[in-house]
Length: 236
View 1: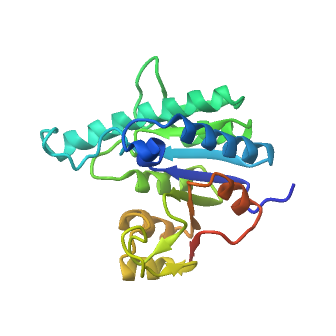
View 2: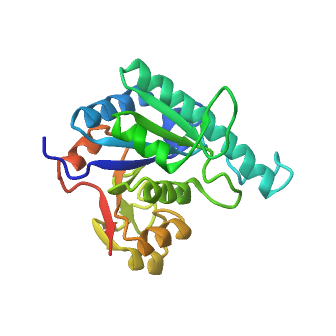
View 3: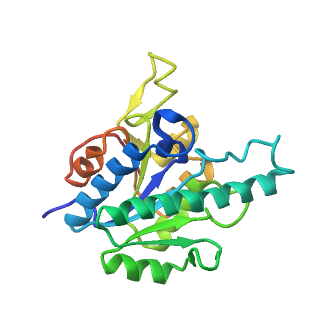
């Protein structure tokens, strides 16, 4: 079957896993994600995932953490919970799946290396990256860009709650302008909230294509892989 990309890095926010609950996990969301990933793997696509932690802990919550470093460390640990939740869901759906971490947690996840991840992907496994970059002050968007480059992904797919890139939040502003195609420099110049500026700069400097699609419809991933013009695309 002809597909647009053979190896993808899918960036999921923690909030996406919570669905309408706003916190924790929505089993229906997890199951729909698993269905989309199963279909992608059957099409011959190698799927890797970076997941955030906003459904459990957000680093901006200074009322809980002692400082920014501690907050980011708590967030990194929360991404492991999300990685394990995804792994369990995917395995129940019949997929082979491995979770790798930016830092080791013995008996729970193995430490990430690019070579290990590429080997697992070549064997047909889904690989989930937890722990962000392993360093404070870096977002999981930056981790997604970094991992995508390290594993030589063809594209970074950011799955969001909206159907692409807008000049402002379309949920709050009915006059928000939709951008189907953009360059990296346009995203940076207009300060569009696609990903943080470090992540976009990393993609630009290494010519990594970014696709933004809605996670609300899991079929969007398959439609994109089949070449349909959905969502937004950021290139040079």
